Image (tube, rainbow, N blue to C red; front, side, top):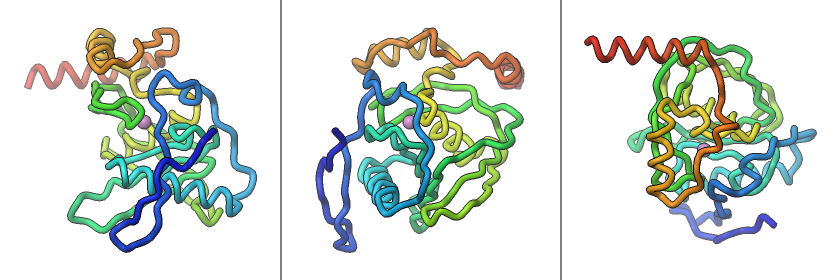
Length: 209
Ligand code: NI
């Protein structure tokens, strides 16, 4: 059962609920998450737990299945250290547009120390509810951290993990075993022929530079 892992005091002296992040190999990471029917107080508390846990873990994003809750919520904050905190909450997100391609070097709080290059769209438009239940649309372009992070966190809600998008399966396999994580699940790998082709072209351009 999900439980509060630790209660710590933030710099402002506010109680934070830091939850345990489940690791790759845990079933909840592969299960599809359920829609939120009402942004109730319980949902708001879960959102706050996600934000607190993300900051306590120095993460850029965190999705509810990563704390063992299979509901369609994720949070992210792509602000730099010099900028004020800027958490963005996505409830029942839908990616309504995606285009372009980019190579993204990614890790995940559920895969400690494991990083590999993955294929991502360069531009996405996402529609979601915020923590007050208000609908918003956000567009992220040009393969920015925000654009890539939205795709990574959104995937978690469908039980898809970043390694399923790995450009080099052998390298990903090596990184997983080096960090004592379970192997790739080849049958789960995402087949996106057009995106793969666009990424191959990007790589070729890099080589020819
Ligand atoms: Ni992740």
